[in-house]
Amino acid sequence: MQSTKPHAALLASPGMGHLIPVLELGKRLVTNHGFHVTLFVVATDASTTQSLLKEPYPHINIIILPFVDISGLIDPAATVVTSLAVMMRETLPSLRSAILALKSPPKALIVDLFGTEAFAVAEEFNMLKYVFDTSNAWFFAITIYVPTIDKNVEDKHIIQKQPLSIPGCKSVQFEDTLQAYLDRNDQTYIEYKRIGIEMPMADGILMNTWEDLEPTTLGALRDFQMLGRVAKAPVYPIGPLVRPVGPSVPRNQVLNWLDNQPYESVIYVSFGSGGTLSSDQMAELAWGLELSKQRFVWVVRPPIDNDAAGAFFNLDDGSEGIPSFLPEGFLDRTREVGLVVPMWAPQVEILAHPSVGGFLSHCGWNSTLESITNGVPMIAWPLYAEQKMNATILTEELGVAVQPKTLASERVVVGAEIEMMIRKIMEDEEGFGIRKRVNELKQSGVNALSSKGGSSYNSLSQIAKHCELSL
Ligand code: UPG
Figure 1 (tube, protein in one colour):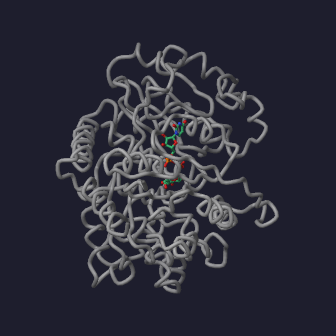
Figure 2 (cartoon, protein in one colour):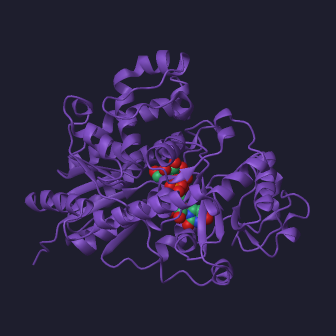
Figure 3 (tube, protein in one colour):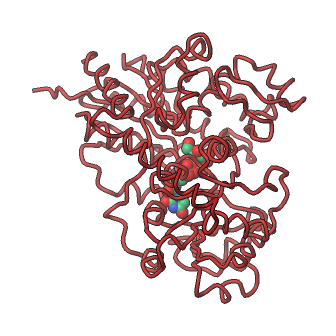
């Protein structure tokens, strides 16, 4: 007998920032909404991706699509966005074959931002098509609105540096704008623009946010007089979807060290799955940490401008290494209070640890949500993509982070300013206020996901209903 469970196919683009939330979506569809899920993942040799996929995911059928070599198709200096867009495009034939080979055809295809060209495949197989924006509603709003005012973006926003006003939403300041918008002839802009045109063609738009986190922007997206004229598809905030603390993560040196530190005394420093700093900035950060006299865990990667530094890490397992680019004597002087971790750390487990009291973050949306859902105040240190917008949400709208002033001027942030930021969130009155607000948001995220009428839970129930109706 054929299963009556709705079957959804999910397509994740490479990179932990996309794979983690897509996997969490798959888990929720299975556990709470009775779905059968097939997850298509584009093969990469990243060890982090491989170890994440090794974990058991009951009732999720994971299919690794073959590696595609795009080296001949892109400029060697192409941005990550361009590479991902091209890679996902080149993957479409194997996605089509993999869907054909499935015993029961899925009723819906859910793709992330970089997968919207697969809508054509969904249509071919008569499937519902959804896009999952793994970031927030404000980023989604700018992405779909920019193609409609293409020329204005260049004239007013980029050349005259005026704020980019999006109907019903907070305007985007020139300083916060996406790097991709700065050159309309660059392939990155062209890909972003295409994605912005394709996303509203979905049957529904899922976002890793929730009603109480971004009420104004979500309202604007639904208002047909405003952005709704662009995005006719219904909007479903389904977050916060974050990876839970995993039983499969072994106790390691960092977690053991955290066990011996006082409550909320440690600041965690990390720049996401691939971010890093310049050598000068790294030296100032080290100095700032030392000056602050706070306990810290710092995930360190070779600086952008020092390729040779990678050689000082044991890159295979990230467990050993001598970070030669840190100031002389830094490790010795901070041995009692700090831990420097090469390349990668169990971030969710760290943020959930009671000893952690602050997070200096690049504001990738997953890191942001992981901090909020663990009630950890932040220092916002955006690097690229939509991270400056995320930092503005955190500091100006939600009041759960502080931000170094110098970052806006693109100069190196000096140790003394970093010290001040760290002290502010770890020690000051202002820090207590921030901690209170972030804990309120943590609770509102819990409420959104509650099966007893939570708004995000209800959003996923609606999607389940659509899929069941089309069975
Ligand atoms: N992570 C670890 N250990 C580390 C570093 C990262 O577990 O040492 C995890 C982290 O917990 C998080 C993920 O890796 O779940 C990183 O995701 P995120 O914080 O979103 O950063 P990026 O990988 O930089 O994410 C990309 C974009 C970012 C965007 C995000 C979601 O760079 O701007 O918000 O994707 O679309």
